[in-house]
Image (cartoon, rainbow, N blue to C red; front, side):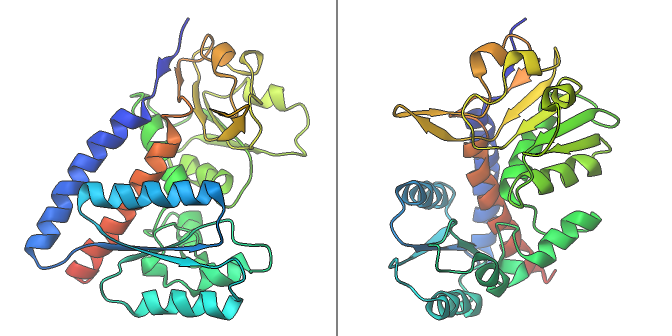
Length: 284
């Protein structure tokens, strides 16, 4: 068998068309959604991500601000910039580009962002909402991945879902979202014994470990939905955490890298920003 490709570019284009319409509706009420990005240092990968976010804002009509700060920025200077965006009425969403330089405290910085402007979904308030299943901002990558899973048309309730990777950014929130869909969820990590025994049971397999080609075809259940969150550079090429060639011959659905979850992540960031503007406009 050959897996159906879950095309993140196509899904993203469809969602962005809808977001552009919502932005226009807000503008007719005198509101332009605004996204502020804070970039500290000159990490090449972060520069690319920020540029893609700026382009996404321009595509759907969102006001975009980027504060580029030097590598030697202090914690106090970073937090002062966050506070300035907190106070700025033109800004509905704030994103602190990670990773920060090693001398800066990421958690302390993220805690400074107002929860209602935390469009990355990393603030402890929003993480708590996700844990309890109450309304809040949902982290962008897991939200995008869940949208892609839903595009299979499968009834998710009762399915076995395995998430490989337990980061606060992807693995843990992804597990929570799948649990809210009534999946039976296993969260695997670097200390998991006999990983393949877990992954072969998965009707839905989400992989976010940062190791190119880590999951191979013999580790996948025939017909499974495989979501590859990994972005790894190998010999100048971008590869995912899933060995696409072998896994695509076993799985029922698979996301490509590039052209899969990465594009959807930025689209979900834009959607979170538009939603933040709508909530403020409607007094929610």
